[in-house]
Length: 122
Image 1 (cartoon, rainbow, N blue to C red):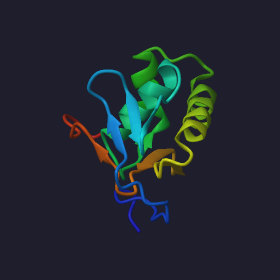
Image 2 (image 1 turned 90 degrees about the vertical axis):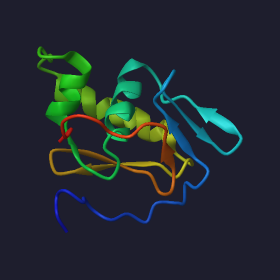
Image 3 (image 1 turned 180 degrees about the vertical axis):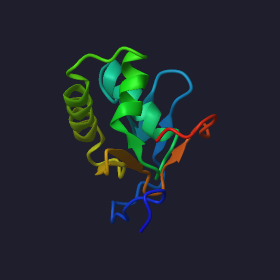
């Protein structure tokens, strides 16, 4: 297993689930819409969804959340945002897993409405 591919998961199938980054960040699962939570959870979901299946470091997530000036508590704030995001995504087939010094989004058959662009997020 390489860091680039990340760990394998036996996540529930998320076929029919879609992560939307255009417009309001949200997840459509089944017949409903799952709102990922507040601004931090939406930002973390967006950052991870732009690199599905690839680890995104806590440092990079902090940069997404606070720009170049993250608070001393940024690591714990990212962990808390991931915890709340995981709770919101329960039952959708999407999984946020800890990997190395970051997190990886497992789509489990779900789709994302945009492809990752620009520099790697790890």
